[in-house]
Length: 520
Image (cartoon, one colour):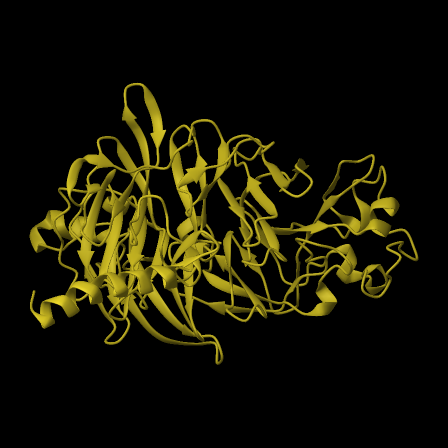
């Protein structure tokens, strides 16, 4: 054997052992930021919420290799992958928490909410939600509390995972919830409601009832909740003193409800509006990256109201319930509004810039980004770019029509926006008139040059997952999985990732940030 061949013979196994030593610690293999190497060995996984994969099964969670864009093992087409132990019926949403190596899957067929362990690629025992089928459900990032709202029974649920107890609170016409990542603010929204300026909760109207100024939790005088219509409510976890003071008093400190009444653990308090703030059909809240402000999205005309806007709620120590865990916004007050002429149904932050998606009433609003005939009466999708430091709008641009439920940043300075019922708007009408206008439910917006690219219509865009670092995006559109290049928005071959059932949502399990396909 030649000397060079002998050197290579010994060098290869030596390098292999060295790399294996680096990857192995305490019997576990690590591949990224301390994350455990999964059993499949796939390093770029996209999870799919699939409904009715077969006549015998109503739900499954397959995942694909997003590096090779295949469902099967790269060298064996007979080996495919899915989350083991999952039993949910008709999985609909995936709350993606890749930093915690977990995902939370909600299934509308049985109302189950299950955590999926990305490291073991297995599902845990479903979490009980006493409200039954929920319109929206979220878990906080520490995975201690689950909040859900049922738009049919109008029940608000809080599931305490540490105590393994679920509580149901009554809030008439509640239909959605929003939770900040840390779980300190949990807001519930009343459907089709408005709230005028200067409508104050009992805690705000009488400062002596603020737990921060009265730690005992006992008001100095009887607390009579002010009359008036409230649109937004805050879930509050009571501390020990407050639990005692609230026994058999479901309207403790002016709360809408406190449960359980024999020894309350949670209350829901109305959120006040200051002299310069209103709520007009609020549907969601987004949270500033530093946690200092809550931005409530007022849907306005798109939801049957008058004015689309953002209502700003500052988060300071004085508005948080002292000595409590979980949701704590006991004295929240909206202090100001920012008008959004293009509509506001969803939003996402990029530093101090907020991108707000909504629909503008075409032909009747001169600030619509897409031109339309006067009196047309149809809505047209619009993206509003807002500087949150100055409160000024820096641009408005056309996007897909419809209700915008998904917004995800991806590679190559792109923002992807997904909507439902996009075929009922202005773009579809223009297309049918022979203009050739695209009217699909998916938009790629380039944040570097402010250009929009609308996809061809494939059905509702219900899921978006940015496969960061690989310049691609996976989507669920019209019940199927598609792949796009972020460089130019062109489609990639999806023939090896399609599912037999209906794909409703997708999530990049190995994303670097929880912000990838997570809506709070």
